[in-house]
Amino acid sequence: MNASDLAPLRPRLPSPLEQVDDERFARRGVRLLLKRDDLIHPDLPGNKWRKLAPNLRAAAGRPVLTFGGAYSNHLRATAAAGRLLGFTTVGVVRGDELAGRPLNPSLARCAADGMRLRFVDRATYRAKDDPAVLAEILRDAPPDTYVVPEGGSNAAAVRGCVELGRELAGAAEVVAVACGTGGTLAGLAAGLGPGQRALGVPVLRGGFLGDAVTALQQEAFGGRAGDWSLDERFHHGGYARTTPALEAFAQDFEARHGLAIERLYVAKMLYGLLTLVEEDAFPPYTRVVAVITGSEDGSNPRTPASEGGQSAASSR
Ligand SMILES: Cc1ncc(COP(=O)(O)O)c(C=O)c1O
Image (cartoon, rainbow, N blue to C red; front, top):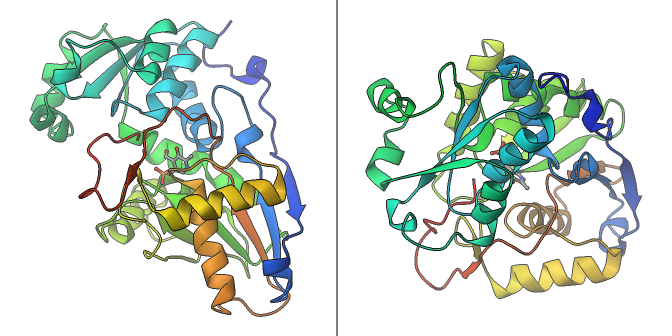
């Protein structure tokens, strides 16, 4: 297979758009639709496909090196792409203490897909964008390696997410998406048409995301693109943190709609949307799309928000 031709993977694009009947939204005159990006591909669901596809085309079969935490969905998707398309993958994993331990299920899957894992200490990992540090990391990598940043969010990835917005032309006034690095939001907003706006729900604490999205749009489009905003209230303690209220909400949503809800990102976005609806933040007749950016496979750890600060066990 030609490793830069992704058509043989048969992605389901455009992804389906499904209306859901939810009385809590209907009562306020708001229509809820789910953009089922989780159905694009079983191994590269949601924004993993949208962000990786343009990078894999650019890599054109060269080895791909990328970065992630011990439970990184992005590492898993990259490893799976390598197996499916037949190119070499290298995963640089945060935490050299992991090197001597048995692999967790997520990293074991990466290894089974042929990914070479390289564990680095946290200081090196933090400094990975420094050209000297990156050069050192690349010393052991195969020649001509193509580097994809943590979370897969670079300019090519952001441009890949534009299509998500375009697929929603005329379908809604508001499109909500969960944010980690902000790459998906940056591209989505740029692809929406007049009268449409994107709403980002950060799952990390810290208030840095507005600047990150602005910088990604600058890099990808040369300036701010589309109408977008953030609501920073729904992180539930930070990355991979949860609260009883979030868990109860997610279980109830699953029971109402027969759909497993990915907890680290998607549940927080849907929780935020319901809160906004109950605050009458949307006028009657508003059509709101919730982007289902990933699927729940139960493999990610979650820590109660009451147990300290933001988790270091990032899944990005
Ligand atoms: C399921 C899911 N939704 C949303 C996001 C956030 O994407 P981004 O980092 O582009 O903001 C991620 C992270 O990659 C994710 O795994």
